[in-house]
Image (tube, rainbow, N blue to C red; front, side, top):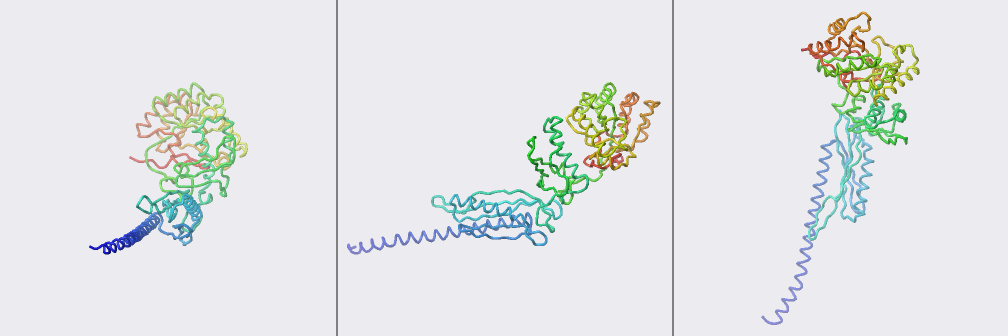
Length: 468
């Protein structure tokens, strides 16, 4: 081959090499772009399917930015209106976009959707969630991958016709709602902290909800969170789990399993209840018998008795026996007291019981014929009477008669009235044995009525018992 021919070949090769290189680069770029577009399409489809699976009625909005796009999958109510979850979604979308932009990401695409849990009919708990994707270049490879993600705050919506989260008015169920929220919140704090009586007063005086217009709260499928103004206890929030507060809220917004249970025919249970002055010897003997028999009962001491015999009451509480309020003195005429006087009387009794046990009584003793509405209003708690009277209040009654009265009159689900009196103490071992022989379980008042105890209601007997 001649020299000029070699020269021509070399020149052609020098021309062809860059052409081939740039041609390969071009097709490689086109292939990468096609792969990225395919990835974007697949990711978009995945988020759309996620939205459909969590709550199928939604609209898709696109916000085109200088360096990319934000896709919003926004739930709509049954009337076709976008709900205000969109505002929280937009905040998350902007935050994710700015975060990617700050990190100089390329081809930014943000997907904002939601997680949804159906609580009841058209009631859903929705949580906005989002992720930002961008072009990721590594050595000689390029792909479209997730940069970061973010989860928002969940909220509960009635998607039949509302566009805003449920309000406190929506959650309000009946007259028991407000006092039970406060009662359960206070009890929850008392279980966590050893408050002094002064601190207890501060706790009870926090700005708990007092009407249906209350706004300092948030609600999710996990529970009700109350937000408080600055206080000396340093309490900013108290969250009541749904398992605790659910039974006292509107069942339309509560997941099944957390609503107020209907009366159940589970077992043959009865509750022994003792009105007591906490005389050291008699109360001690009753408690010893209950411990020996592994039996549970409920004591109703007066506030005066709790003040005089705190150690005895503390032993009763330590033995896991239940304690209720019986007014401050045994001869208090609560039926004729003004609401203000009765409220002060019960508060004084509560304080005496709290000083002895570190807990507050959440129900009070009344007679079966109590009809005074002022009592219910002043007490702000469940009222416990009885369905079986042992008649141990009679001065001439014997232990055998006490046992007979109880056994013959008990049919199951009963609240049995007793006292820590000498003849009752004599009767108690046989009474417990005979009740158990008939298949009855001895439980406390809270256990007998499960989650159905509510303020303003009077209870004397649980639901019809299970029949063998």
